[in-house]
Image (tube, rainbow, N blue to C red; front, top):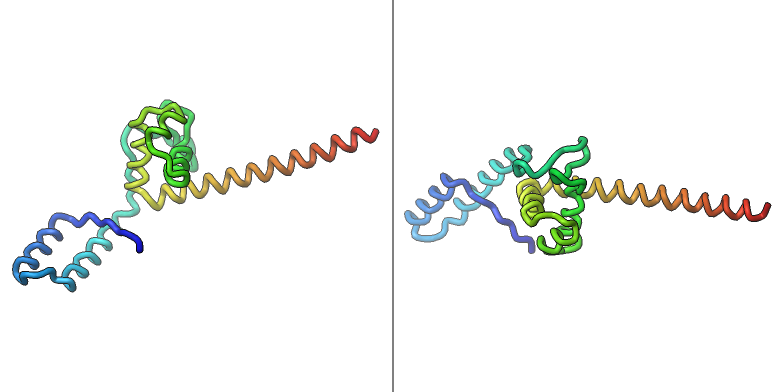
Length: 150
């Protein structure tokens, strides 16, 4: 079962508490209605990308780096999301300040879909580069064999 954490706007929380007090119990139907409203409201705001100020620089349309470094956020995202490393471990491995790692994590929390898409695109690009390199090395091996025959 997946856990879903939704931050209800204060006005919706106030409505829910008021209904709860009036009915003396948790009004499930009303709560579902309020949750639907909150989800729709958050979905309409989902297109706004939240980026912590001063930590990132967009090098190109497909590349975001930590400001003042040559390290892309994909390296932090990969270690945090796929390898399960702790922020302190990531900072030590990549020679980053802990605040820089937490900036990437806060970007992830605020922009989960965009961050996963960014990471997926990076991993696809890297796989394509590795296949291309392997193909070139295989051709070089063939060339070396042919040269040895001469």
